[in-house]
Amino acid sequence: MVYIGNVPIADTPLLLAPMEDVSDPPFRLICKSLGADLMYSEFISVEGLIRDAIKSKVKLEFSEIERPIGIQIFGGDETPLAMAAQIVETTRPDFVDINFGCPVKKVTCKGAGAAVLKDVDKMVSLAKSVVDATNLPVTVKTRLGWNEAMINIEEVAERLQDIGIKALTIHGRTREQMYKGEADWTLIGKVKNNPRIKIPIFGNGDINSPEKAKLYLEKYGVDGIMIGRASIGHPWIFREIKHYLSTGNHLDPPTVTERVEVAKKHLHNSMEWKGERLGIVEMRRHYTNYFRGFENIKVFRSKLVTENNPERIFSILDEIESEYNFVQL
Image 1 (tube, rainbow, N blue to C red):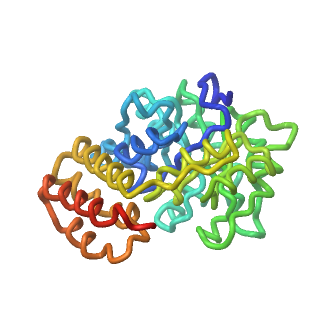
Image 2 (cartoon, rainbow, N blue to C red; image 1 turned 90 degrees about the vertical axis):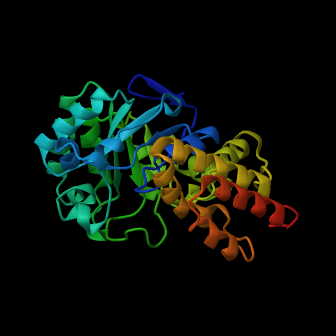
């Protein structure tokens, strides 16, 4: 059993990555039902939380079914981070997670996210401000370094552990790489196998199949795996990996009926959580992913992304099931 602080997670846990505009409560509930062991909120600006911005506060919401869950925050200054951690604590998640890995310019230009990889002393100070401000376990998600000339994840891991970070997720790319090229897990393995490191180390990057998950777990010895992009439109990946790890066999891919049922459930969750209108609109980005690879799906997709009546949307999804149910995908 892997623990974060005193919170039990799972044997070889599978984590759903925090993804902006993706890993909201409706999607997290789908992934939880299909085998995800631990998940995080979308990342939240500490300035937004302190200003009481509605968009930021909404991201604090979660349901008891989702536990264990962490709320992820980002910021580049100690005091706002500490204040945000205290706000997060009032919502009673299981962890506070600090984003030290986001590579996008609008985050790094504020000295937050992956920008702190250029200054390990600052990263440690920022992390310590959160640890000192909350009684919740604090975790961190980060990258190998800022660029190839500034890879410092081994030092980062030791120093974060020393100031009280309870788990570390490492994305196997530098900030400069963004999401391009192949993730390098070699250094993730080195961190995990460092005898000084006692906290759980989770690997992230390019896990898109049960075979790769098993290979990387065995080769690099990490405590668990975080999955991001591969879960978009295919949340069954958590169930598939777990089955393969326990049996060595593959599950059959989801049927058309299963895809339609999950899309319906996702839409239902979205409307229930956000209200009918917003739930319908924000669900539109997911239809392409759920039915990726379906020949001539454009006609149905066009209807799904323009229809505003929920009963009609469910009817269109029924039409998809009827149309493609006997097609070998």
